[in-house]
Image 1: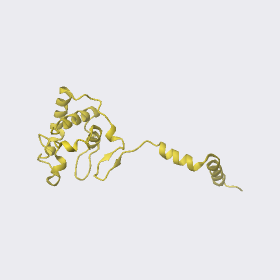
Image 2 (image 1 turned 120 degrees about the horizontal axis):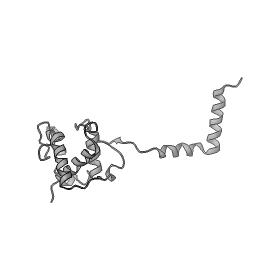
Image 3 (image 1 turned 135 degrees about the vertical axis):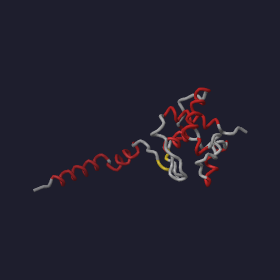
Image 4 (image 1 turned 60 degrees about the vertical axis):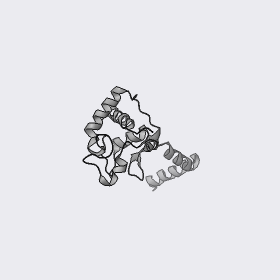
Length: 152
C-alpha cells in the first residue's frame, strides 16, 4: 500500500525538478514585501524609510498642529524647545534627545523621523506613538521637529 504522504512528496520533488524549484523558492523570498527591521540603534525602520516623503506641506497651519502634538506628547522628554532637557529626559542620552542639531537632519529625513515616532525603541527609551497618534498627527510633529533644526 502506497502512503499518501509519499505520493505528495513525489509530486513536490517532481514539481521542483520540472519548474526549477530552487529558482522559484528564491524568487518567492525576494517577492515578499520588506518588513521593518530593528537597526543597531534599536529603531524599527523599513529599508525604504529614508525615501518616505511627507504628504503634508510644512506651512504655518501644519507647524502649529505639529507644535501642539509635540507639546502634548514629546515635550516631557525632549524639552519645550527640543533641546533634550525635559523633566523626563534621559540624562545619559541628552545628545540624542536634542532635536535642534542640524547635522543630524541628514541622517534623519522625514520618513526616518516618522517611523521613529511611530515605532519608538526600548533603549534608550522612546515611546511608540502608533496607538496614540494617527498618521497625519505624526507627519505634523515630523514637520515641527524638522523645523527645530538649527540653521547655520
